[in-house]
Structures are given as structure tokens and as C-alpha cells.
Image (cartoon, rainbow, N blue to C red; front, side):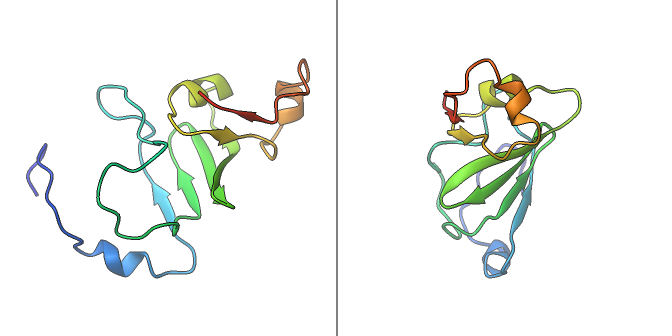
Length: 113
């Protein structure tokens, strides 16, 4: 692999998408600070709808019913940090402590950038 160059092809990833539980561990943002969690994928897909969890340095997100549900925000970050660094819509109904975070405005059922 050549750093900074995109190589087209499936490689070994095709084998990984056939598991029952698929967990992705990744950085939340790219080196230039742009979000990696997008509304829509801009690259060729190896598998569609196969990821169950996304673990990043800022938060734990579960993929359920085609939506991204934030389960936990990690130490050193706030929910606002996670929202501002994510392009996709995030749902927070099941976020640990979400009632305390959003007790000022109970109408917030989800957050979208």
C-alpha cells in the first residue's frame, strides 16, 4: 500500500463482511479534521449494512435499524464534540446519561448537523 494513494479492490475485506457481528475501529476524523462518519459513502462498498458497532476515540456508536445510535461518549470529549465532528445524523435516545445532558429541552430526540 502506498500512503496517500487509493487502491481500488476488495482485498481481504470481503471475507470480513460476512460475519454476524462486524465492529469497525477507526479514527473519528481524518488528519485534516474532516469527519469520517459520512451521510453517504463516497467509495466503492465491500458490503452494505454489515457494520454493527463503530468504536472511535470520541464515542461508541451502534448501527441499528439503519441509524447511528451514540451509546457512550469517551472521556475528554462531549456530545457536542462528537456531533460537530460527524457528518451523519446521530441518535442519542440510548446514550448513557442522555436525559441529564438534554434535560433542558426534552424535544431533542436526535441530533443532526
